[in-house]
Picture 1 (spheres, rainbow, N blue to C red):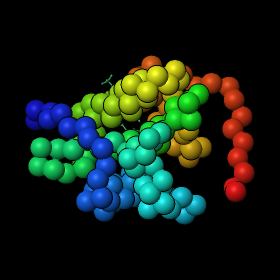
Picture 2: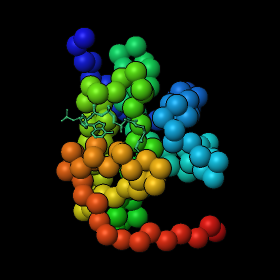
Picture 3: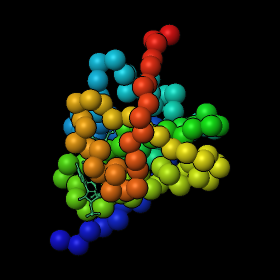
Length: 141
Ligand SMILES: CC(C)(COP(=O)(O)OP(=O)(O)OC[C@H]1O[C@@H](n2cnc3c(N)ncnc32)[C@H](O)[C@@H]1OP(=O)(O)O)[C@@H](O)C(=O)NCCC(=O)NCCS
């Protein structure tokens, strides 16, 4: 079957249900992160956005949340509809996130992989990403 590229565009309010459903089916929704709050904080902001890969019939097939603090850029919620995987959409949505950061002159992009999802490391390695020896610390505020 011929692979249709997804059109990349920013999140709009009408996409909310589809985006949340995609994150859910991709296993990216966890009890300690409210997707509505994440969308509210990130979508369409000066330093962050949610980019979507949309199929010709208007369905949301891929997402990436991007943001930066002026020093580092971050990718979150990298997701491709299970029915559309293996067709280059993951590569394309990560590239879109990188391009968003590059356009804002952010020199470095980072992302976190959950301990339960380390298999995806090879996906990023294939796209030129490298694991770095750091300890990530956090505190809930
Ligand atoms: C990871 C994910 C985004 C990949 O999407 P995809 O559309 O299948 O990826 P692509 O088709 O663009 O794959 C690009 C390359 O990575 C490879 N690849 C894809 N998934 C891989 C994996 N899990 N492990 C190793 N390589 C992988 C592909 O074979 C392809 O290689 P090629 O260019 O040499 O042919 C998708 O599997 C997904 O949504 N997973 C669940 C959510 C998730 O874990 N997100 C990451 C959170 S950190």
